[in-house]
Every structure is written in C-alpha cells, then in structure tokens.
Length: 146
Image 1 (cartoon, rainbow, N blue to C red):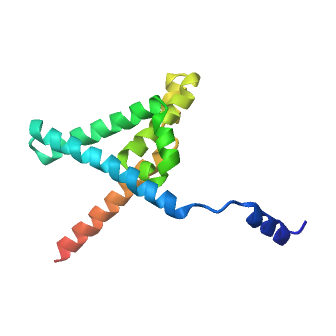
Image 2 (image 1 turned 90 degrees about the vertical axis):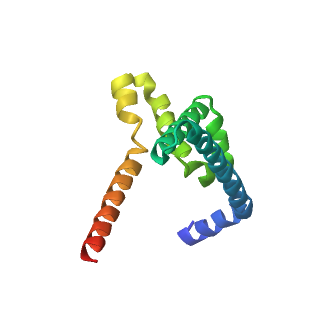
C-alpha cells in the first residue's frame, strides 16, 4: 500500500472530531474553575486584605484542590471532558505534578517522586521563568530609554 492510499484510508476511517462541543466544554469547565478561583479570592480578601497575600492564598487553595482531585481520580475525568479548559488553569499544573508523583512513587521518594514529578511540568516552569525574565528585561529597557 502506498503512503497516499494509506493516508486516504486513515482519513476515511477516522471519526470526525466534535470541535464545537469540545470548545463549549472547555469554555464552561475553564470558566467554572476560574469562578471557583474568584470566589476563593473574594473570601481570602476578607482575611487577608493585601492583594498579593490574598492572591497567594487563592493560588495555594486552587493547587490544593487540583492535587486532591487528582489524587481521588476526579481531575482526569474532568480533563477528559474539558481538554484545555482543565489543563490551562493552575489546577491543571497541580494535576500534572501530582499525577507524575503518584505514578513514580513506587520507585521511592527521592529517585521516584522527587526526580520524576517535575518531568512534565519542569519545562513549563523553565519557560515561565525565562519568558518572565525576557519581558522584565524588555520593560526595563523601554522604561529606561523613555
């Protein structure tokens, strides 16, 4: 079978992707996660009036929720339904780290969990730090010139 024939056969037998349905689910679940985060932020502002303090509390609680839902096996079901709507918020990051830690815990705490739990999330952290540095550098150069 030639590559062109194989490609045509694959296209004929591949079911169509429900793009609109997937987009709606991603929007709804991502919006729900952000709404929960906003409620937690509003509640934390009662106890911690500073913006940075209440934001830190909100991030910590959202990471805890993501890690707990991953531990109980619920977050994977949510992510299967919502796709990027569940992967993009901070809870998706917590899911990635927690799932990797759970997968490698049999290899021990140091060589398993300690070294492997950031195997997927590590590049995200590096990219975030590097892009933040570049943006800060550009901003300081622009403000320094003006």
